[in-house]
Amino acid sequence: MLCFCTARAQVITSIGEQNLKIPKTEKKEVEKKVATNDKLPEIDTTSVYYNLIDSAQFHIKKKDWSKAESFIRKAIANEPSNGNNSLLLSNLATLQRHQGKLNEALKNYNMALDMTPNAVTLLMNRASLLLDLDSLELASADYERVINLDPLQEEARYNHGLIALDRRDINTANSDFEEMLRYNPNSLLAHEGLGLTHKATGNYNKAISYLSDVIKQSPSVTLLGNRAECYLMTRRLNEASEDINNALQIDPNDGYLYLLRAQLNKIRYENQAAKRDIQLAIDHGIDPAVAKEILEVGN
Image (cartoon, rainbow, N blue to C red; front, top):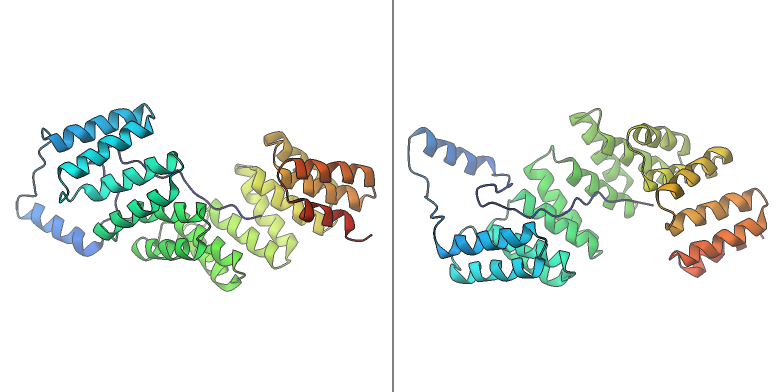
């Protein structure tokens, strides 16, 4: 039960507020120009281009994604060679994600990154979309690029580690999470990642310890479910029951939790309760073949 950290893709609401990481070599050139009073390019905020962008921002604030998309397209068409179109293409892609146009969004993130290949925000946005599209290898490559540009980017390193864990590349996953701890000894994401790594390798008591560190500060359905699994594997049934019940209070529609409770009830020889929970798991989206395996194991 892995949970990728996929923050909502950023809509950049101001050309001046780019939220981009500038590579060190480029940053030095900008600082050099400022130090020598060389003029940086001026922005004409009265042009048709920027009026169209203002209109797009107005509709973004209203969450009218379709109209905002239309104005961004018009702005790009108005000045197709404008260097700020990288940001507009990124925004266009994010608006398309809101509308479920995932393949179109991917094309626009790609074009934006062709223009600004070292833009961390754009790489993070595209990686997040690739996770939604189950393109884990490509997402991992984007996260690796972000890590190279910004070693302190926790979300990128965490997701890179989780993808490695999904591939059973334990060494890479462990390296990512340990490196996060080196940069930030109090990192909750690092503790969560190490908890999941120990769970994957069957070291359930260590997994419980790491997951508990995070749950104390920020409980979630995913964390409680993962710890409940570890409790089940170590036959700490009361603790498992408490985690499952607490998670169900947060999200009563999570089918995986009913599957865990079915396992718990089966261990307790409460077969009718187990059958009830298997049906609840199926009703809440769990594959019937997977769910019914729980009842068959050990029969």
